[in-house]
Amino acid sequence: MSLYRKYRPQKFTDLIGEDHIKGTLLMAIQTGRVGHAYLFAGPRGIGKTTVARLLAKAVNCQKRDELNSAKNGEPCGECQSCLEITAGKNLDIIEIDAASNRGIDEIRDLREKVRFAPSFGKYKFYIIDEIHMLTTPAFNALLKTLEEPPAHAIFALATTEPEKIPATILSRVQRFDFRRISKDDIVKNLKLIAKSEKLKAEESALEAIAVAGEGSHRDAISIFEQVASHSSDITLTQVQNILGLSKNREILEIVGDIAGHDAKSAIDRVGKLVEDGVDPAQLVKEIIETFRKILLIKISGGDSEFEVTEEETLALTKLSEKFFAAELNQILTIFIAAGQLSKETSVRTLPLEMGIIEASENQKGEKLEALNPKQIKPKEEKFAPTISNVGTPTRSVGEIQKKPEPEKEIEKKEIATEIPPKSSEPKDVDEKIWKDVIEKVKPHNHTLNALLRDTTICGIDGEKCLINVRFKFHLDKISEPVNRKIIEDALSHIVGKKMQIVCQIAEKSAKPKSNSENQDLEKAAEEIFETE
Image (cartoon, rainbow, N blue to C red):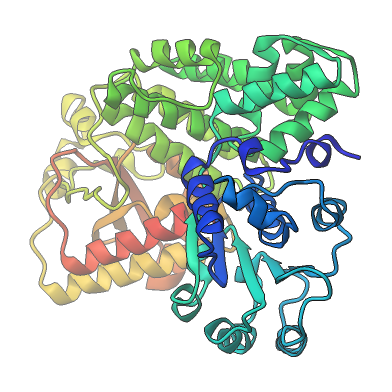
């Protein structure tokens, strides 16, 4: 028998945490005011079905009246009913998995059988797990039974997603919301299990297991059992090696490299982790989670509490001193984009490497201003390229003005002026052309397509098309010969003549966009940053 089943609580007093639920249910049992239907909602592995079984045991306990007279609503655990429920052999306790019995036929069968009186105990007790998985017709069939149940029937519905349950069902049950179990409570219980199993365990090892459990008592005990199967002397090193927690230090070192503008070192660490079998997409998620913790520590002044070890808390606090809050926001935006792009490229590490380079480069500049991709509104720039810009890596307007080419001074005077204001109709035409270009690029290069969605067209002048980008990294990628050719071929095909693109970095003091432009940018951002 697995440890989490062996050490499942047999009385309400054995439950870890959930004091608000224990007190309410025990009072209801003592006063004889047990409801006909309950909803237990909360994350996995925190005791929802366990509480349902304890309630079933308590209401069917043969010594219930005797115990209640002593002001104790606990089941005795000794009578025939309690022993059968503990062994899972009581015919009056029916457990249904709604994930595999989710149709209307199963619920109709339940409605037919619920009318029959219990075979032995006082109540027929139905425990329906993952209730949110029922179909709409099944919910409708269950509704009538919950509305007018037989006097001998009690329902306990358990779910991890209460928001999916119809309001008509919620209005007919008593709802209890379970909370994640704290790290300290899990460590306390793991110590009791270790003592009972005659195992030795370091305090730091149990703490690491509790953190890995992420608030789930069942998950923590399963991890403890996995580690204990290797050795009866449980150490922190064993836990880290078995669970792969040693890479947490590597993640913190990657973040430290980004803070120190050392993109090469960070990418080298990523390469070693990938060689060891770590999924690049998982690395992106862990980097995002690490930066999230650093951000929360930064804005709270170090008062934030996380389910992490003391060693990791200290490291996160030190890293928070190396960033501004706005920088952390921008870096999170970069890696969220990298996570999305990782699904669209065959080179799995490329988006992560791109994100590391961009985050490291941003760290060299001033305090960042962009907080959200939907808030970014680049302004239209003055179009001041020279003929020498076309077909070569693009320079910013400032660089062009600092280093004019004397032999082409006459040509520069002809085009180095601001693009004349256009009527709304030509401007709309330019924007439509650019949207068509972005869509045409997509079949050739998904990553380039995503980068172009964050660009702005400033205008088309003859055979030249000027576009704005927000970051130097984007400018460099778009200016690469292969990428430039893809874009120019798409543009030339759409407008019907040979075209060249001129790319430049937009200044941060952006001119507000029109409503239609903002809607387009928001749509692109939502598509790029959409999470599961």
